Image: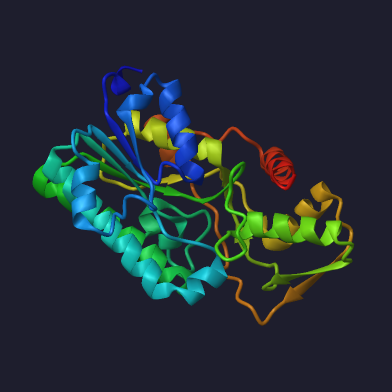
Length: 312
Protein backbone atom coordinates (compact mmCIF):
# COMPACT_ATOMS: atom_id res chain seq x y z
CA UNK A 1 0.00 0.00 0.00
CA UNK A 2 2.91 2.38 0.65
CA UNK A 3 3.85 2.33 -3.05
CA UNK A 4 0.87 4.55 -3.89
CA UNK A 5 1.25 6.96 -0.96
CA UNK A 6 1.24 10.58 -2.21
CA UNK A 7 1.61 9.41 -5.83
CA UNK A 8 0.17 11.34 -8.76
CA UNK A 9 -0.95 8.80 -11.35
CA UNK A 10 -1.73 9.30 -15.05
CA UNK A 11 -4.00 6.68 -16.60
CA UNK A 12 -4.13 7.17 -20.37
CA UNK A 13 -7.39 5.79 -21.67
CA UNK A 14 -8.61 5.93 -18.07
CA UNK A 15 -12.24 6.50 -19.05
CA UNK A 16 -12.28 3.39 -21.24
CA UNK A 17 -13.24 -0.24 -20.62
CA UNK A 18 -10.09 -1.36 -18.78
CA UNK A 19 -9.19 2.16 -17.63
CA UNK A 20 -12.33 2.59 -15.53
CA UNK A 21 -11.45 -0.59 -13.59
CA UNK A 22 -7.84 0.59 -13.11
CA UNK A 23 -9.06 3.90 -11.70
CA UNK A 24 -11.35 2.12 -9.21
CA UNK A 25 -8.49 -0.18 -8.13
CA UNK A 26 -6.28 2.86 -7.55
CA UNK A 27 -8.94 4.40 -5.31
CA UNK A 28 -9.18 1.09 -3.43
CA UNK A 29 -5.41 1.32 -2.89
CA UNK A 30 -5.87 4.69 -1.23
CA UNK A 31 -4.96 6.98 -4.13
CA UNK A 32 -6.95 10.21 -3.77
CA UNK A 33 -9.22 10.90 -6.73
CA UNK A 34 -7.59 14.33 -7.17
CA UNK A 35 -4.23 12.58 -7.64
CA UNK A 36 -5.52 10.47 -10.54
CA UNK A 37 -5.27 12.15 -13.93
CA UNK A 38 -7.31 10.57 -16.72
CA UNK A 39 -6.53 11.31 -20.35
CA UNK A 40 -9.48 10.75 -22.70
CA UNK A 41 -9.07 10.59 -26.47
CA UNK A 42 -11.83 13.14 -27.01
CA UNK A 43 -9.99 15.90 -25.11
CA UNK A 44 -6.34 14.74 -25.01
CA UNK A 45 -5.09 13.51 -28.39
CA UNK A 46 -1.82 11.75 -27.51
CA UNK A 47 -0.75 11.82 -31.17
CA UNK A 48 0.08 15.48 -30.51
CA UNK A 49 3.40 15.94 -28.71
CA UNK A 50 2.38 18.96 -26.61
CA UNK A 51 -0.58 17.01 -25.20
CA UNK A 52 1.76 14.25 -24.02
CA UNK A 53 4.06 16.80 -22.36
CA UNK A 54 1.11 18.39 -20.55
CA UNK A 55 -0.38 15.03 -19.57
CA UNK A 56 2.72 13.91 -17.62
CA UNK A 57 3.38 17.19 -15.77
CA UNK A 58 3.93 16.48 -12.03
CA UNK A 59 3.11 12.78 -12.53
CA UNK A 60 4.88 9.98 -10.60
CA UNK A 61 3.39 6.88 -12.29
CA UNK A 62 2.06 6.48 -15.84
CA UNK A 63 -0.21 3.57 -16.75
CA UNK A 64 -0.47 3.73 -20.54
CA UNK A 65 -3.65 1.96 -21.62
CA UNK A 66 -4.68 4.27 -24.47
CA UNK A 67 -4.97 2.33 -27.71
CA UNK A 68 -6.86 2.26 -30.96
CA UNK A 69 -8.09 -1.24 -31.78
CA UNK A 70 -10.97 -3.53 -32.63
CA UNK A 71 -11.92 -6.94 -33.97
CA UNK A 72 -10.62 -8.66 -37.11
CA UNK A 73 -12.93 -6.73 -39.45
CA UNK A 74 -11.90 -3.37 -38.01
CA UNK A 75 -8.20 -4.25 -38.18
CA UNK A 76 -8.50 -5.31 -41.82
CA UNK A 77 -10.20 -2.01 -42.71
CA UNK A 78 -7.84 0.32 -40.82
CA UNK A 79 -4.30 -1.17 -40.74
CA UNK A 80 -2.47 2.11 -41.39
CA UNK A 81 -4.47 4.08 -38.82
CA UNK A 82 -3.93 1.36 -36.21
CA UNK A 83 -0.20 1.27 -36.85
CA UNK A 84 0.35 5.03 -36.81
CA UNK A 85 -1.94 5.96 -33.93
CA UNK A 86 -0.68 3.26 -31.57
CA UNK A 87 3.00 3.69 -32.47
CA UNK A 88 3.01 7.48 -32.16
CA UNK A 89 1.06 7.50 -28.89
CA UNK A 90 3.43 5.00 -27.29
CA UNK A 91 6.63 6.67 -28.49
CA UNK A 92 5.55 10.15 -27.44
CA UNK A 93 4.00 9.43 -24.05
CA UNK A 94 7.03 7.39 -22.94
CA UNK A 95 9.47 10.05 -24.18
CA UNK A 96 7.46 12.78 -22.42
CA UNK A 97 7.42 10.69 -19.20
CA UNK A 98 11.19 10.19 -19.35
CA UNK A 99 11.75 13.92 -19.88
CA UNK A 100 9.47 14.76 -16.95
CA UNK A 101 11.31 12.37 -14.64
CA UNK A 102 8.35 10.05 -14.05
CA UNK A 103 9.25 7.34 -11.49
CA UNK A 104 7.45 4.38 -13.11
CA UNK A 105 5.96 3.75 -16.55
CA UNK A 106 3.61 0.80 -17.09
CA UNK A 107 3.24 0.05 -20.81
CA UNK A 108 0.31 -2.14 -21.82
CA UNK A 109 1.03 -4.19 -24.93
CA UNK A 110 -1.13 -6.75 -26.71
CA UNK A 111 -1.35 -10.47 -27.35
CA UNK A 112 -1.42 -9.54 -31.07
CA UNK A 113 2.34 -8.91 -30.79
CA UNK A 114 3.06 -12.66 -30.70
CA UNK A 115 4.08 -14.52 -33.89
CA UNK A 116 1.27 -16.17 -35.86
CA UNK A 117 2.41 -19.73 -35.13
CA UNK A 118 3.64 -19.38 -31.55
CA UNK A 119 3.60 -22.75 -29.74
CA UNK A 120 0.92 -22.99 -27.03
CA UNK A 121 1.21 -21.89 -24.28
CA UNK A 122 2.82 -18.62 -25.44
CA UNK A 123 5.98 -17.93 -23.45
CA UNK A 124 7.41 -14.39 -23.30
CA UNK A 125 10.65 -15.73 -24.85
CA UNK A 126 8.67 -16.58 -28.04
CA UNK A 127 7.78 -12.95 -28.71
CA UNK A 128 10.40 -12.37 -31.44
CA UNK A 129 10.30 -15.82 -33.08
CA UNK A 130 8.25 -14.83 -36.14
CA UNK A 131 5.82 -12.35 -37.70
CA UNK A 132 2.37 -11.71 -36.16
CA UNK A 133 -0.86 -12.93 -37.74
CA UNK A 134 -1.45 -10.76 -40.82
CA UNK A 135 -4.86 -9.26 -39.95
CA UNK A 136 -3.57 -7.75 -36.70
CA UNK A 137 0.16 -7.34 -37.45
CA UNK A 138 0.13 -3.51 -37.89
CA UNK A 139 -1.59 -3.10 -34.50
CA UNK A 140 0.50 -5.78 -32.79
CA UNK A 141 3.82 -4.46 -34.08
CA UNK A 142 2.99 -0.84 -33.20
CA UNK A 143 2.28 -1.86 -29.59
CA UNK A 144 5.36 -4.15 -29.58
CA UNK A 145 7.57 -1.14 -30.29
CA UNK A 146 6.81 0.02 -26.75
CA UNK A 147 8.70 -3.03 -25.49
CA UNK A 148 11.75 -2.05 -27.56
CA UNK A 149 11.46 1.55 -26.35
CA UNK A 150 10.90 0.48 -22.75
CA UNK A 151 14.01 -1.74 -22.69
CA UNK A 152 16.13 0.84 -24.55
CA UNK A 153 15.13 3.64 -22.14
CA UNK A 154 15.90 1.42 -19.15
CA UNK A 155 19.33 0.56 -20.60
CA UNK A 156 20.35 4.10 -21.59
CA UNK A 157 18.52 6.29 -19.05
CA UNK A 158 17.77 3.94 -16.14
CA UNK A 159 14.08 4.68 -16.80
CA UNK A 160 11.84 2.32 -14.80
CA UNK A 161 9.47 1.13 -17.51
CA UNK A 162 7.75 -2.26 -17.58
CA UNK A 163 5.80 -3.97 -20.37
CA UNK A 164 2.74 -6.19 -19.88
CA UNK A 165 0.99 -8.43 -22.42
CA UNK A 166 -2.69 -8.90 -21.52
CA UNK A 167 -4.66 -11.53 -23.39
CA UNK A 168 -8.13 -10.73 -24.87
CA UNK A 169 -10.21 -8.91 -22.25
CA UNK A 170 -13.96 -9.07 -21.69
CA UNK A 171 -16.47 -8.08 -19.05
CA UNK A 172 -18.86 -5.45 -17.74
CA UNK A 173 -18.60 -2.20 -19.74
CA UNK A 174 -17.07 -3.81 -22.83
CA UNK A 175 -17.38 -2.24 -26.30
CA UNK A 176 -20.51 -3.61 -27.99
CA UNK A 177 -20.28 -1.39 -31.08
CA UNK A 178 -20.38 -3.78 -34.10
CA UNK A 179 -17.82 -1.61 -35.94
CA UNK A 180 -15.07 -1.99 -33.33
CA UNK A 181 -16.05 -4.71 -30.81
CA UNK A 182 -13.99 -7.82 -30.11
CA UNK A 183 -15.25 -11.38 -30.35
CA UNK A 184 -17.11 -11.83 -27.03
CA UNK A 185 -19.21 -8.63 -27.07
CA UNK A 186 -19.80 -9.05 -30.81
CA UNK A 187 -21.14 -12.59 -30.30
CA UNK A 188 -23.22 -11.66 -27.24
CA UNK A 189 -24.85 -8.80 -29.16
CA UNK A 190 -25.45 -10.92 -32.27
CA UNK A 191 -26.96 -13.85 -30.35
CA UNK A 192 -29.17 -11.73 -28.06
CA UNK A 193 -30.38 -9.69 -31.06
CA UNK A 194 -31.26 -12.92 -32.90
CA UNK A 195 -33.10 -14.34 -29.89
CA UNK A 196 -35.09 -11.16 -29.25
CA UNK A 197 -36.05 -10.74 -32.91
CA UNK A 198 -37.10 -14.38 -33.27
CA UNK A 199 -34.35 -15.39 -35.72
CA UNK A 200 -33.47 -19.08 -35.69
CA UNK A 201 -30.00 -18.70 -37.24
CA UNK A 202 -26.87 -16.60 -36.84
CA UNK A 203 -23.75 -16.35 -39.00
CA UNK A 204 -20.26 -16.31 -37.47
CA UNK A 205 -16.94 -15.55 -39.17
CA UNK A 206 -14.39 -18.29 -39.79
CA UNK A 207 -14.37 -22.03 -39.13
CA UNK A 208 -14.74 -21.96 -35.35
CA UNK A 209 -11.49 -23.94 -34.97
CA UNK A 210 -9.30 -21.05 -33.78
CA UNK A 211 -8.71 -20.95 -30.02
CA UNK A 212 -8.57 -17.97 -27.70
CA UNK A 213 -7.84 -17.18 -24.09
CA UNK A 214 -9.84 -14.53 -22.25
CA UNK A 215 -9.21 -12.54 -19.08
CA UNK A 216 -11.97 -10.86 -17.11
CA UNK A 217 -11.41 -7.10 -17.04
CA UNK A 218 -11.34 -6.77 -13.23
CA UNK A 219 -8.65 -9.47 -13.07
CA UNK A 220 -6.62 -7.63 -15.73
CA UNK A 221 -6.84 -4.42 -13.70
CA UNK A 222 -5.65 -6.26 -10.59
CA UNK A 223 -2.68 -7.71 -12.51
CA UNK A 224 -1.65 -4.31 -13.84
CA UNK A 225 -1.84 -2.70 -10.39
CA UNK A 226 0.22 -5.52 -8.84
CA UNK A 227 2.86 -5.18 -11.57
CA UNK A 228 3.02 -1.41 -11.03
CA UNK A 229 3.66 -2.00 -7.32
CA UNK A 230 6.03 -4.95 -7.44
CA UNK A 231 7.66 -5.49 -10.86
CA UNK A 232 10.75 -3.57 -11.96
CA UNK A 233 12.47 -5.63 -14.65
CA UNK A 234 12.94 -5.23 -18.41
CA UNK A 235 11.44 -8.59 -19.47
CA UNK A 236 7.83 -8.53 -20.76
CA UNK A 237 5.15 -10.31 -18.71
CA UNK A 238 2.01 -12.13 -19.90
CA UNK A 239 -1.28 -11.40 -18.13
CA UNK A 240 -3.85 -14.11 -18.70
CA UNK A 241 -6.03 -16.83 -17.22
CA UNK A 242 -4.20 -19.83 -18.70
CA UNK A 243 -7.56 -21.07 -20.09
CA UNK A 244 -8.05 -21.88 -23.79
CA UNK A 245 -11.36 -22.26 -25.64
CA UNK A 246 -12.22 -22.69 -29.33
CA UNK A 247 -14.45 -20.10 -31.00
CA UNK A 248 -16.92 -22.91 -31.73
CA UNK A 249 -17.11 -23.78 -28.02
CA UNK A 250 -17.36 -20.09 -27.13
CA UNK A 251 -20.35 -19.57 -29.44
CA UNK A 252 -22.02 -22.65 -27.96
CA UNK A 253 -21.48 -21.41 -24.40
CA UNK A 254 -22.86 -17.92 -25.13
CA UNK A 255 -25.87 -19.51 -26.89
CA UNK A 256 -26.47 -21.69 -23.81
CA UNK A 257 -26.17 -18.78 -21.36
CA UNK A 258 -28.52 -16.57 -23.42
CA UNK A 259 -31.05 -19.33 -24.16
CA UNK A 260 -30.50 -19.24 -27.94
CA UNK A 261 -31.15 -22.61 -29.56
CA UNK A 262 -30.99 -21.60 -33.23
CA UNK A 263 -28.55 -22.70 -35.94
CA UNK A 264 -24.95 -21.47 -36.07
CA UNK A 265 -23.69 -20.98 -39.64
CA UNK A 266 -19.95 -20.55 -40.20
CA UNK A 267 -18.80 -18.18 -42.94
CA UNK A 268 -15.55 -19.92 -43.85
CA UNK A 269 -14.74 -17.28 -46.48
CA UNK A 270 -13.88 -14.98 -43.55
CA UNK A 271 -10.57 -15.27 -41.64
CA UNK A 272 -10.11 -17.05 -38.32
CA UNK A 273 -7.29 -14.73 -37.23
CA UNK A 274 -4.45 -16.25 -35.23
CA UNK A 275 -4.88 -20.08 -35.14
CA UNK A 276 -4.28 -20.55 -31.40
CA UNK A 277 -3.90 -18.29 -28.37
CA UNK A 278 -3.12 -19.36 -24.85
CA UNK A 279 -0.51 -17.85 -22.54
CA UNK A 280 2.04 -19.22 -20.15
CA UNK A 281 1.12 -17.15 -17.09
CA UNK A 282 3.81 -18.43 -14.71
CA UNK A 283 6.02 -15.32 -14.85
CA UNK A 284 3.26 -13.01 -13.56
CA UNK A 285 2.63 -15.36 -10.63
CA UNK A 286 6.31 -15.69 -9.78
CA UNK A 287 7.23 -12.01 -10.19
CA UNK A 288 4.26 -10.23 -8.61
CA UNK A 289 1.80 -12.84 -7.39
CA UNK A 290 -0.90 -12.43 -10.03
CA UNK A 291 -3.46 -15.16 -10.72
CA UNK A 292 -6.84 -14.72 -12.42
CA UNK A 293 -9.75 -15.20 -10.01
CA UNK A 294 -12.94 -14.96 -12.10
CA UNK A 295 -13.90 -18.22 -13.86
CA UNK A 296 -14.80 -17.94 -17.54
CA UNK A 297 -18.42 -19.03 -17.22
CA UNK A 298 -18.96 -16.68 -14.27
CA UNK A 299 -17.38 -13.79 -16.18
CA UNK A 300 -19.56 -14.44 -19.22
CA UNK A 301 -22.71 -14.56 -17.08
CA UNK A 302 -21.83 -11.18 -15.53
CA UNK A 303 -21.10 -9.67 -18.96
CA UNK A 304 -24.36 -10.96 -20.50
CA UNK A 305 -26.39 -9.75 -17.52
CA UNK A 306 -24.78 -6.28 -17.73
CA UNK A 307 -25.40 -6.04 -21.47
CA UNK A 308 -29.06 -7.04 -21.12
CA UNK A 309 -29.56 -4.38 -18.43
CA UNK A 310 -27.86 -1.78 -20.66
CA UNK A 311 -30.51 -2.37 -23.34
CA UNK A 312 -33.34 -1.23 -21.03
